Image (cartoon, rainbow, N blue to C red; front, top):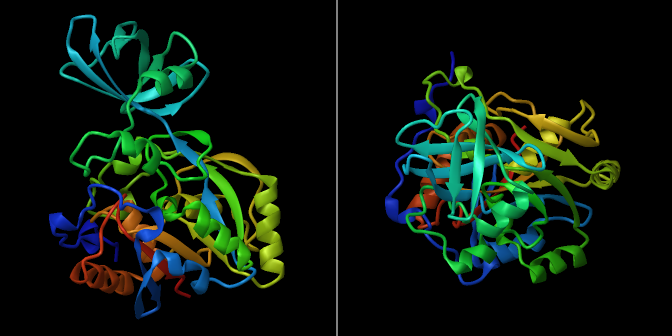
Length: 341
């Protein structure tokens, strides 16, 4: 029997959705889930919950100022959300306007420069910038907070909606599990013998797209670019050899590792594109534990954590989190999930 979208629904009081970050990154709560056992901890307890020889794998992508406002040649208002940079001067983007822009047309963005509409690729538009696209986006664009944060980006978000280890420009959303880490916590983890490695997956705007089919086997994931460095593959191999565990920091790190995974649990070095859709029944090859935030009802990310931790167990954990006033979504609290066998 196929799983349906309704299997991944749950009631969430609106006041549980975190609208702003806490004063300190690592001040979040941490719900530890091992099978049917749930334990309320603090994120600063993480060094006590991991073992010497474990390896944290983090996504070092950096969020672009990917939201740009502008006008068409006719004067109509336009909102552009960059999905990905495809070349030095070209991007794929969502374009919201009262009428769809035509190929060959110009859009004036942020009253600063014009982009040319080259054509359409599915739901996205291919746009040509009049120079280096990343430079122009970073100079003139706005930070694209998720749609469930009901305010405009403020100056504090410039720092707090990036991880402290973000370095590779390319995402339109933060890998939010990593937002809980600050420099002192990372230092404590290293001091306890926990290794740290990085991968890159550039999160696309498709991460916020709703699943529109009841039979989830009919859903098609958006494609995202990833890269696994040689040093990370070697760190994973060494961790496996010495009996350590691979801890993915966030669903983006997990999807990267599983996309690059071989049958023996090693990962392939290099760049690629992934449309991996993880649902219950998926056989994990690379990841033993997952650090993640609480995800939206009916989302592909909730399906992923249900595959990792168990559908019944995740449903119980979310009920516990709601009953105990955990904060949800990007600026919310976190979970540490042990993989179900």
